[in-house]
Image (cartoon, rainbow, N blue to C red):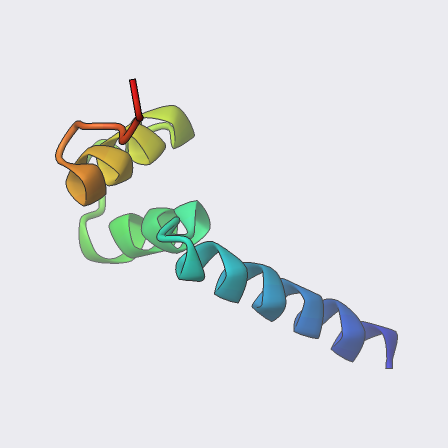
Length: 64
């Protein structure tokens, strides 16, 4: 039961991140390790910055 609750929490967290456009870093790392072995993997900071730029075109919306 506790294991199922933890699993549900992980899925909920993943869903919330995807809803706001923030993909899972762990999913990215797993993909890179499985499909591109030996190639460099971005750090979390690089990954986050790259995803922001891809989504917003390097522009952060502000009123001023």
